[in-house]
Length: 236
Image (tube, rainbow, N blue to C red; front, side, top):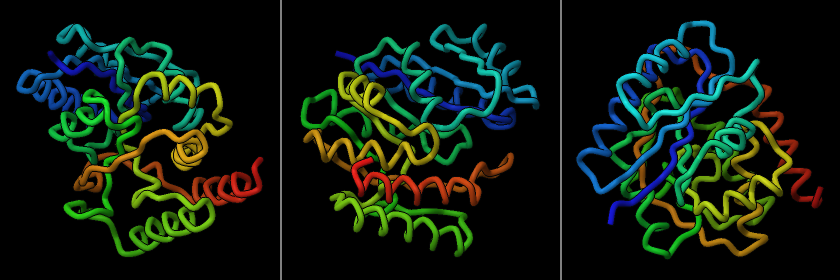
């Protein structure tokens, strides 16, 4: 039986990457035992991203597009994209080609086979790696992961990874319980997983820094993340 999943991909000015990514996802689907729907959640891109996606919708029948009026946060994009999903497994991934679609079967299989509720594509376990990041970005990422694990006592290696798969029933609960709408959504999910006993496992991924377009990483996201850790630690 084919494994089925909805892939939620937030976009903001990803014209240069989105066609390559979708073509790669479809190629993996054709070669693997997968049935996928691709949900693009666009936050009012000004570079023609939406026009590219609309062209791809004429080429592929498994693409859905949600257009939002402005940048509203990564976590909120996942939640809004979930409303359009129909598959039993939810996958989140970046649009900038940093997440390799070839790993989709590995990410989905633990949930499909019943021994995980959340699967993390981890850069920080054996076999995982980061390519192309400057040293300061690596230090910030490691520091954020270490701080999150210490403050919230999380038993995972990669707290901040965005390449993930979720059991639909679990993601539905997350949407109902989540208070975070930005990058801090990632750590909130793992806090909820610990609280409710959801089974979390990690598979190794090689994360590749974007080659095209502008990174969305900024100081504001770091501050939101740190504030979220404090609030979660205090039970807020």
